[in-house]
Amino acid sequence: MSEAKELKTIPAFKTDEEAECFVDKADLSEYDLSGFKPLRFEFERKGAQLNMRVPEPLLDAVKTKAKARGMPYTRYIRMLMEQDVSRP
Image (cartoon, rainbow, N blue to C red; front, side, top):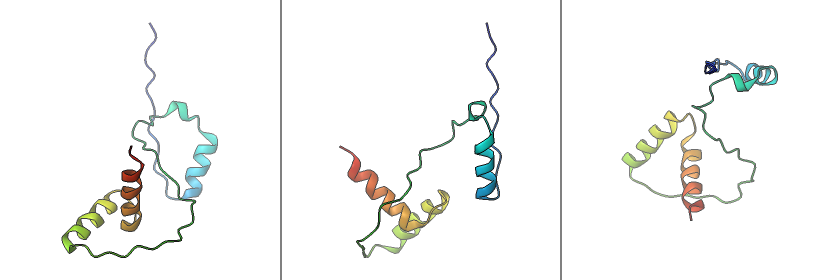
């Protein structure tokens, strides 16, 4: 019986260039990618604008959630809207 291979952790990178260099050279099958989440890149042009009033505590809570995910709160709101309308 063969032993399970211990997977390496992805190192922290200070720049995009460091990350690109790592991905170009590393064998990613040797690394634990279980903590990764799919990321949707935004290529579609944004031609419409939305302006709405919400209670301040709600906006504060949204900003807190967005910050925890490392994204601007407007992008977080758009992501939530896209997830909701894409459900069957």
